[in-house]
Length: 207
Image (cartoon, rainbow, N blue to C red; front, side, top):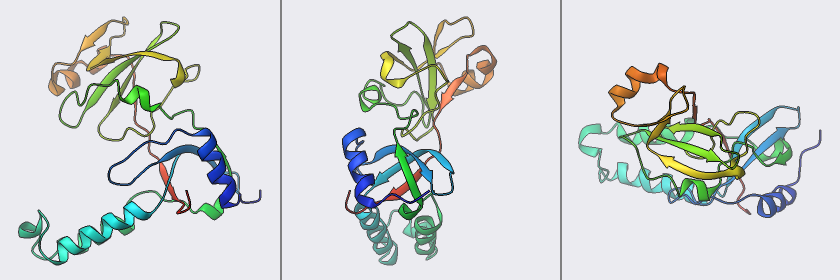
């Protein structure tokens, strides 16, 4: 398969994808990607590189000048760790390898995010989505909100209500979160919790 030209990718994203804001990294456009060799990636975020580069430069300067909040503990090793974090962490793809871009079925609409009432516990957010046909699913994440697993036969556009801080029992009853200890103890009593999905990033400066 031939690679798409940059303008084609940008046109598709701007015409078909709802951008999501990110104070650290800027607007992101979520999609699925097929490579020129046929490899399919269901979860990819496209964004400009500007804010990521600015963040890296700022963090490098903070570490070099001992102004970072970790400088007293890092004893000079913080700078190397920050550089390593920016250049070796994360999943990044090359725009020249992309043959096709489509909408991702794992992309939860921004309006749904806004209905979730913050973290359920430190580092853990759980909620129930109720669909227009009356069916319900549980969702949970430790951090990432960009993509969520979604069983076949469901569509995020058909969510009509969000119940924050609750699980679904195997009897389809709504169970409020009490504590992480109780959650771990009672996990077998709950329905499957659809979790956040890993994703790749692709930078397009003209986006």
